[in-house]
Image (tube, rainbow, N blue to C red):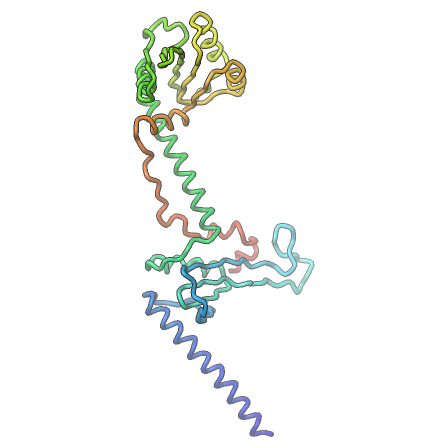
Length: 297
């Protein structure tokens, strides 16, 4: 009986020893293949027997077994513990499991900096979209500021610029005199004989109100143009928008003006790049992990 127990113990020790050797061999193989000089502690690595066409990873966030509505610890239970579902990284023939999501994103980012291609997960895709939209908005505002700064001291040049824009669209455009323009700045002549009137205002942040739209509509009573346009580098008040809708005036704000400039002047927005800004970091994880758990990770 005693000999049997000894053999069982030796078998168990041999099992753990072989598993230890196996895991270390896998880790060494992984580090050599991807030129990584370290491997996080408390990490499991296995062979991926069903390798995919792409490398990817899955984040799973820890939570309390019994949680409050905000995800923090329910202090009414003394035996409350944190549950770690574990995060999975699949790279070629390797499956790496890391319980701590902070360690996982650090390791994934390190691999990427070694040119290991790992697909974005849903959180990185969401972050990329936000960064892109923020940069595009800032770029548009910067371009709009350039337009305003170019013409703010000479409104008539802005009117001439808008007339050239219509000409690039293919519509004959004629500027009215610099003074006594009669409530509109540009007269449009379409090939079918229709006319249009355009009023232009180069403002920074001042919204266009209803009275200026009314002035354009009133001026058209003696002209009888079929189309009325109002162009500004700023925006319109709600009352101006409502009145324009009632009277058929087409409003073009700063952002729409930029789109026309880019389209018909054959210019393009500068390429927006986010490089590695979309990599997840600790601040990003704070959005998904309860505060009292994050502090102990």
